[in-house]
Length: 199
Image 1 (cartoon, one colour):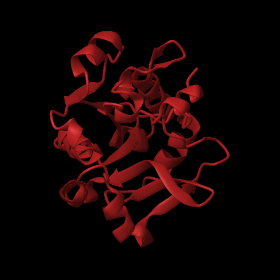
Image 2: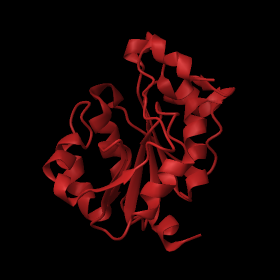
Image 3: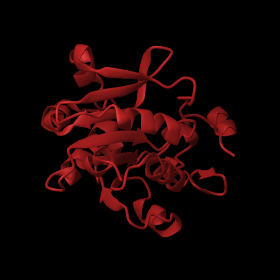
Image 4: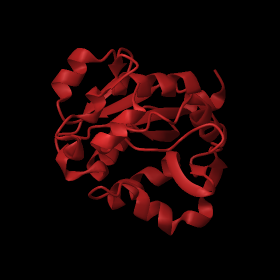
């Protein structure tokens, strides 16, 4: 395990209730015969994240029951309906005191982003001040990596469904963009039509 892999925790945001999917929690959508949250954890592990924290919200008890998430730190966000910002805050809070120096944040509803893209973002981590983002044809996307020095101000600015968007916009000159369009597709599973992406 490299020093980067030891210092960077994977942070999977998997709390969404799938409002536009008729209220089907995204973590429980089937992909390759298993819940999507399980697939997403496998991607982080395959990329080199030894520590993985998973933020659960909608149907958290059912997710715990159906998905194989052994070895993960499961973080319940009771305010998940408030949007991604609350889940990001809960996840970053859960990393305090763990020794992690950076958080690599991924979203449960982006199965087109595999270990190759995550590995590239992970490799660009340098120190507590790192801000790294995958890019797709030059456009910033996920996953993103936040050095520990950024956690508190990101948490303070994370509201609604914006997550870290406002913070990243204000600090765009400090972001290292890592091009990933050749190894990943950054689509979201948001609507019934998007379910065609699942296998």
